[in-house]
Image 1 (spheres, rainbow, N blue to C red):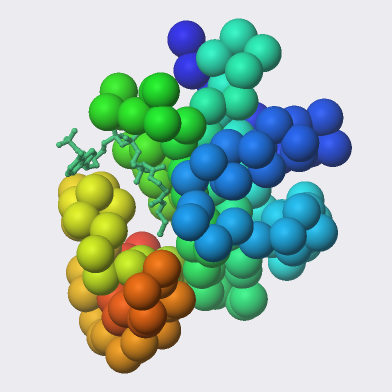
Image 2: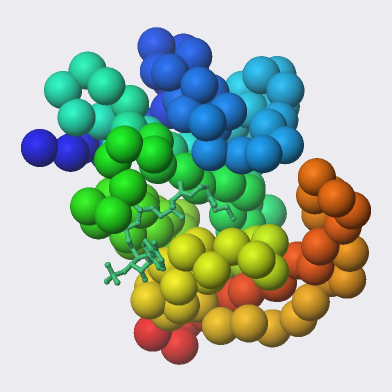
Length: 149
Ligand SMILES: CC(C)(COP(=O)(O)OP(=O)(O)OC[C@H]1O[C@@H](n2cnc3c(N)ncnc32)[C@H](O)[C@@H]1OP(=O)(O)O)[C@@H](O)C(=O)NCCC(=O)NCCS
């Protein structure tokens, strides 16, 4: 059964490997490790001893930004991404946040569907924000207001 636990020094390497399988332009390990401490909060989802997914959030006052979320390819389509997102929302509410923001590649229809299923709405577009193998692509900015829920 999947369990959510705070990212720690013990799970950092495994979570970073999942990040590297999930992102075409992964962060450095040091950047990912920033997720271990404030102003970040980060969780992994595990099955047994295996890290199957993670998320990293950054909080400033009552605004949380979901910096990254990923599920290992072999465990996708089983509800783990949604479990992670629902945890982002409940943890943000617990931390007295009123808004959650995120940016997502316009071509990432899977992630956009997940965010919409969890109540996020499109609020803006950053043109040519992300690098791609062949150039640049837009970022969709999405927001969830917690106070209106
Ligand atoms: C996005 C991601 C985290 C989803 O994880 P997941 O565990 O497969 O997602 P779930 O099984 O919980 O599915 C949740 C919802 O996502 C959407 N979704 C999942 N797989 C999908 C697919 N292949 N196509 C379209 N929508 C899909 C659906 O809305 C789904 O809800 P539903 O099952 O009620 O229809 C995963 O695909 C991933 O790690 N992708 C690579 C990293 C990434 O793009 N991260 C986002 C960065 S902004």
